[in-house]
Amino acid sequence: MAAELYRRSLDLHPTAEAYTFLGWTYRFQGKIEEAIAECKKAIQVDPEFGNPYNDIGAYLIEQNQFDQAIPWLERALQSRRYETYHFPHYNLGRAYMAKEMYSKARHHFEQAIKLSPEYSLAKEALEKVRRKLQ
Image (cartoon, rainbow, N blue to C red; front, side, top):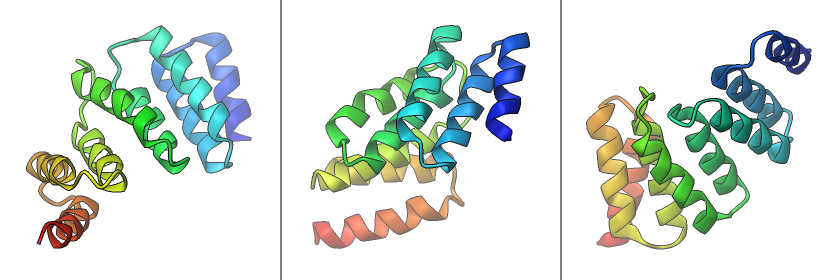
């Protein structure tokens, strides 16, 4: 139902936000490839909108494609139209943690917390990476 409503909305007025939201809908349905495709459409509409870059990176992390996720997340950090830079930092930390690159993971978890001090997932991840570095 939600996906159909987003598609109708996109037929009337395609926006990067609507493509991104449709991607989220597909993600919640377990349709990762479709989610990534919608995010790429969002990027075509507005290359400076950061959310779809972060989302693609997060979806690739879910598929254990850490090397492929990193450039998408780095691009999210460069986006001019983005308000939640702590998310790509957190996701970069996750990717580097999975690759056992603990110093880089720590850096990105710390940046996520600096930008969003109450971000509990980043705090938990930072504690885990600190234990690995001891």
